[in-house]
Length: 416
Image (cartoon, rainbow, N blue to C red; front, top):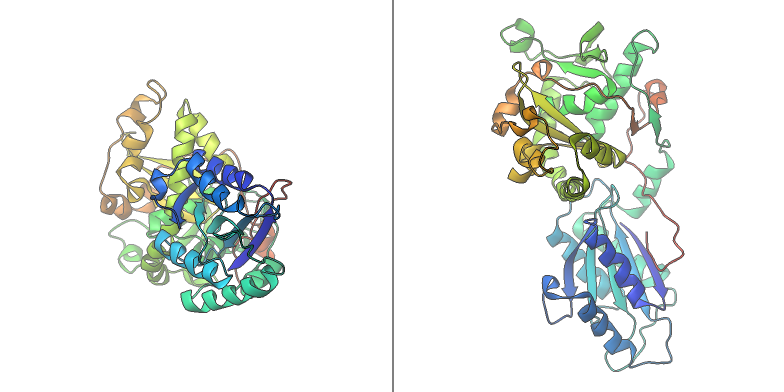
């Protein structure tokens, strides 16, 4: 866990920053500690007045606003209940346990993080000392919470970031122009190692972005019945080309047996990112006026939408891929409002095609059991922002590392 504390002179500015995030569906108020009313009952004015009631008791202290961000590793599994507990214990640990404070969960970055807004004037006018609070009280509290909640340590997060490759445009593999086996192996290792998928079709949703397919073969064949698996290269029309490579020949051994071991843990690990994904989907579909516009808006956020068609050309499902947090979701797994028909139905009248309007909702078990090579995925016209293709030529023993935290420089009173 990485904690950042910034002090300033305007609690209004801190509140405005976080409330604007909430208004833009990029954050949610999950806790109002020390307030009379529940979070959903508090207006901006009532929040501000509650803090100003304290700051007016000490006119001598001008720097009285405190803005804290607690940033967690992408490998930490955190729901709102855990985040509230961490926030309570952290504030108590730094000497702010008796202060009113607001906790906002933000969804505007790939890693889980919360922002805490408060003031350093206690009831009665006493100033709470904040000099060296980051170095002393915060560090002590941070280390204790990492142990108590089983969080990834800040030191380990820094080590992860030190070995990260810079995210640049990752071109899809082109047959005849790339060292095919090495490139396929690198992409398969990266995707199976860092993406959270719960079925083979979900894995293929991520792989197809790079023109790679995990192929079990046709049902009824020996390869299929014996749980064999090969990885093939695809052309822009989604057809297999070149010589496939066996899963067992890839260093990480992403065979069916080993992939299936990931399904249940991945289902748990991806849950915290489902909320972020829904926020971004809701925000985009509220602004979009067509399916193409919706896809473009989401692609700018690193999110891909794949509409699935059957042999008759009818849409029967949708898969969402969040490349920022490396999660893959069938629409209905996110909730009924995100199934193909329900989600596309939220677009303005006339914005969808007849096929999209008639989209069928199939049970998740049906979608997940359809052989991966029988699913119709559209070719992508633009590369996904991902890791360097140079990963194909890295040491085989090098481990995949999560994305570093994005730090934005702000002149206003903000925390990363």
